[in-house]
Image (cartoon, rainbow, N blue to C red; front, side, top):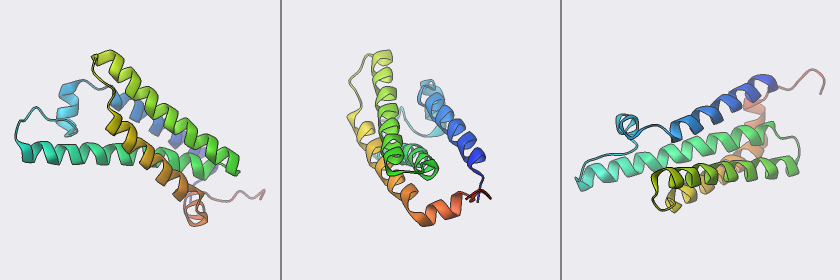
Length: 137
């Protein structure tokens, strides 16, 4: 169990790191295994799967953390909306930077992940595991 302050700090750090990671140069993304220059279909499939998993983990954890920190349903809904807007903003900026089409499949994966994370974060068991009750409650 973590204090609210620690979860807030970790949430901010997580969001900053994911944002920075989204704009790494291509060589760094190849080194991380989220993209590949290979034309081998088996390698492309593996990397595509890892890329999708990275999106799911990144945005799912962000939504989970914000949902755990939210105290009301309206705050959880707002947190989900913020994560979805953040994910879309990243994709739009990447599209503008690289001149290609928007990667709708990334937006789709981010959306599914954020919804799942938000639902898990609203679950009382997750809140008890992650968030230490203050002595003022």
